[in-house]
Length: 139
Image (cartoon, rainbow, N blue to C red; front, side):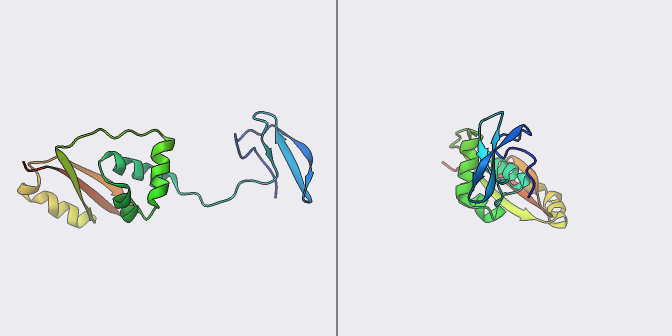
């Protein structure tokens, strides 16, 4: 396995720094990080990170996002903390959402009653679309 860059800071400035467990060890000149191989692990596509954060800002809960995207709610919580996302507090509205394909979405917007009374956001979700609608809580 060839080492191209530091797995910590992505710098290409590194030097050899001994052998540990029969593996060559390297030290990054930029950040001082010691490493022997590239970090390889499960990485979730940035598309899902962006979608999860968008849905979080739209008012959906972690568990709802988990069911929609198939990504752990713990991962979503970690992303919210990592990127310091703050959701605006609004107690007068609650979101409802639907997953629709393109044909269903066009039929939905053809009905006049679906166009008034609440805010609506449509976002792409793979090969389908998610429609998020805010409705006012009844007093």
